[in-house]
Length: 183
Length: 148
Picture 1 (spheres, rainbow over the protein chains, first blue to last red):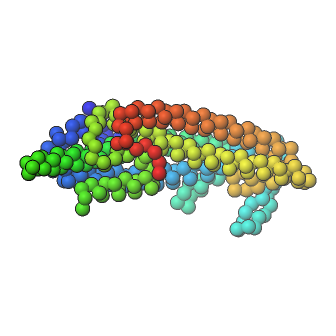
Picture 2: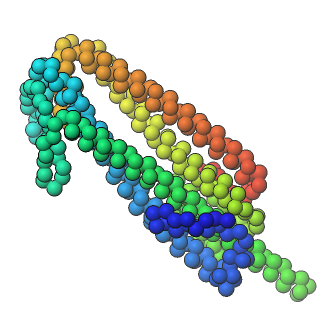
Picture 3: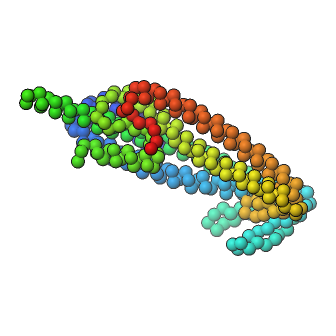
């Protein structure tokens, strides 16, 4: 039997063992049951869309985080070598200016909300790595949630088809009974 | 309205969005579905999702491989000793040899990634084929596991 285990507030679509027994909750009226199931399906789909959006947002942030790590990594690698690095910075769209980089031990990280904080390279590296890890962990959790949601959607879809088939079957039986009576 | 006609519309909508590949046809044929069948169907749905994600990733990785190849070809043609190598948002001036080294590393990583993805795709497809056998074996034409 399907457990009523919840995940992120998503209720489980319980598996229907037997259609007639299931229909008793709806006074054995298949169309009421179908409407209720359709409603549930829609809710699952809305939840899936929301979650997919969140996943896309997060996925688009990960490359940016990697870029930051790359830069800090470069600074760390060159530190102490006394080598002057030349970089081209984009000052406006399509316009680049050259800058020389001497040994540096700190970078400023944009924390958001118009706040920038200066970190040593090691601290920055640590912070950025931690952020990337967190992002990857929540991405993995989201993927799991999406799989779970997909299961609920599939279960509901199958239930709808079964109720519908049962109904058609029932009607056919009734029809053939009537034909028998009239003949 | 024919009973359940909204259901078939629902199914085609879901399939158009290529999200739902599992379809128990509303054809009036009554087949008993057990909890085990349901779990198999759910698993098939998951695998199908995974399959599409892998396809997308493979495409992105292939594009990357092409870009890297283009970059190394350009590098061969270039006669400057100092190149500009993009790190994050800025371009770092770098000797040609170092750029070559970096490109080689990236290419290698890319090839490995691609191999990994192909292996995963094969395993997913294998599992899907097994499930198809089981599910078609039980439900025949009452289930549709193909994509339009």
